[in-house]
Image (tube, rainbow, N blue to C red; front, top):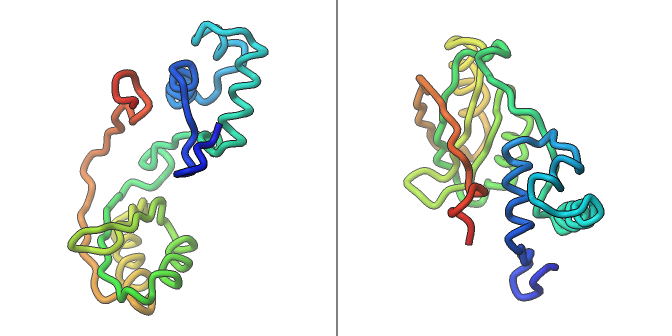
Length: 161
């Protein structure tokens, strides 16, 4: 059920365990999901439908290892932008080559972009010829990623509210 005051979904312990199980393995069948959280298959279908329709679960996807997919160079690129240009910058970043993630920040920089590129030369081109060329981008700062490891995420065990 959606909380009308703030638009969040009210999740009980079973919902949280379902989400955690799906974060861990998005390919779980409903039957396996039901078994894992100790509910009936009918209840699992109903709860999964509610989690999808309320927007708690927004979809299912594959996690790709960028290096194994031919994108061996990764970097975080911080952008300082003109505040009135955010909408246009956001639109351009969504279609920029090799950009995986874009985050709007409240920090020394305004935007943080995760880039996975085949090599350093391509990364340089993305930063210097694409990102810096977007109208409204004042400056960039780039950090190369040497290693990247995913944590368990916010949906695991005791981290839940």
